[in-house]
Amino acid sequence: MASVTSLTAHVHQRLSAALTAALPETADADPLLRRSDRADFQANGILALAKKAKANPRDLATQVVDRVVKDDLIEDIEVSGPGFLNVTVTDRAITQTLADRATDPADRLGVPLLDHPGTTVIDYAQPNVAKEMHVGHLRSAVIGDAVAQILEFVGETVVKRHHIGDWGTQFGMLIQYLDEHPHELDRKSAGDGAAETGEEAMSNLNRLYKAARTLFDSDEEFKTRARRRVVDLQAGDPATLATWQRFVDESKVYFFSVFEKLDMEIQDADIVGESGYNDMLDETCRLLEESGVAVRSEGALCVFFDDVKGPDGNPVPLIVRKSDGGYGYAATDLSAIRNRVFDLKADTLLYVVDARQSLHFKMVFETARRAGWLNERTKAQQLAFGTVLGKDGKPFKTREGETVRLVDLLDEAIDRATAVVREKAEKVGLSEEEITENGRFVGVGAVKYADLSTSAVRDYKFDLDQMVSLNGDTSVYLQYAYARIRSILRKAGDARPLAHPELALEPTERALGLHLDQFGELLLDVAAGYEPHKLAAYLYQLASHLTTFYDQCQVLSDANPKEVVENRLFLVDLTARTLHQGMALLGIRTPDRL
Ligand code: ARG
Image (cartoon, rainbow, N blue to C red):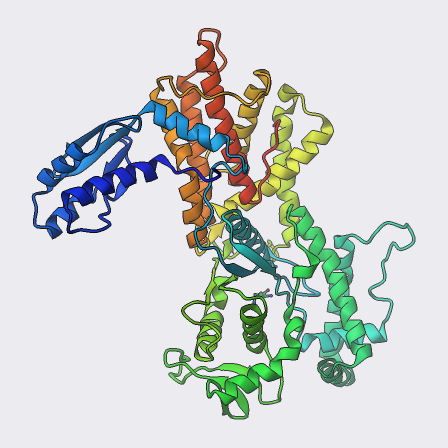
């Protein structure tokens, strides 16, 4: 048996059965069970059910209590207040369920799979060709990667799409310039045999971009030649396409270096940029026009919405094709929807994109619905994220007012983290190599965790001091909690510890155990709402429970009977495995020694 039913679910079943017996006319009566500080669980649903059935809530609660048998699962159940139920489960049930999780043959800690998995196409990590990646691209990559992993873990089929910005009129200028200066993308340090680094690629592209821009702005004849190149590009002229491809390839060298720095796996096959939908654009427009979803207005092909108006009160349309015949961002996204729904057979389309693009997606989705490409069964949703702010609460900029380069940020985070790791390294006996590797995992983890631990739509402050702090809600805190357990397990000889369900548990062991019990349901909930921040919060609470447990209970103590030592080792081992799994789903490493 792979998936393990949680104690919450077991207790829930018992209470609902008792409720249904007490109120035969109410089917599926929900006791509204919650974890509680007073007992293990509290059921708050009786009041509303009693009201509906015109019964006295305390009487109803008492009837439920009378019908629940105390056994291996339920230690105690009592009525409290006007009609709440307090439920305490047995220590045996806690340890036994955890033992079932720990021995899950599928090695997924008993986490259930979705009852009805489908196919989700997730659009994330979509930088732009010939441009630097900035913090916004970081958010899309980090959130998208976590959501994709979580969905896969619960059994959804996930197709990844990196919708990079690789098309548009700006390429006319770049291509023309490169054709006139063919060696501008050559490696400056060519000849040393080493592969081009991402830094080199980006600096080449930057230099070329600036030079092309300057010429474009100052030289009318170049401007004319550049404009002609846009037409050639759109017409699919082979020589023009070949030069364009050089930009794409050079940019990919850079993108992949950043993704690697981010410790993130991106497959080339999943990079399907805007240009990937070029062949569909004509047909997309034809379909929209024939069905009357789009209409011609001042030469352009437009879709109108009752609730989208400009400051002057006039409707602002979604422009699918411009009056000069050119296609833009919207036509591409509408074609991508057709591809994802009809070719990739998606049930769900997710877009991890900046909240500032929300109006665009609202209009694109509504257009696709009117066209019948999206409907009740096939849904699209933007997972909008907020802006990254500096310490001062303003959008994150360098002192010179430029957008911050993502690589610089990551490098700084890694530097700071390495310093933190180094401070403790001697005590743990880490080699220089391990310090460097851990520094990377802690630094990148800090950045990812800070991003993932607040709900995506909210803006968040990029504060490196806070991010690498050992105390508080940070990844370093979680990584140290993990490493501490691993060190204890190493001391104990590293065999998979045995659970002892017959033992009575201390209050802090129970609290830790009951929190571990919720992992499976938590993940299903996180997957259903695409909310990695809830997983981060769960893991932080788990580490906090662990800390309290350590304060109260010795694990490896000669004063403990052998079974107690084993059972505590079992508890911390499962905690470590849960931390490891949870962090991995967030894209964060948990080094064994830290
Ligand atoms: N490349 C775009 C940007 O940097 C994001 C693309 C989002 N995805 C999409 N299907 N429009 O803002």
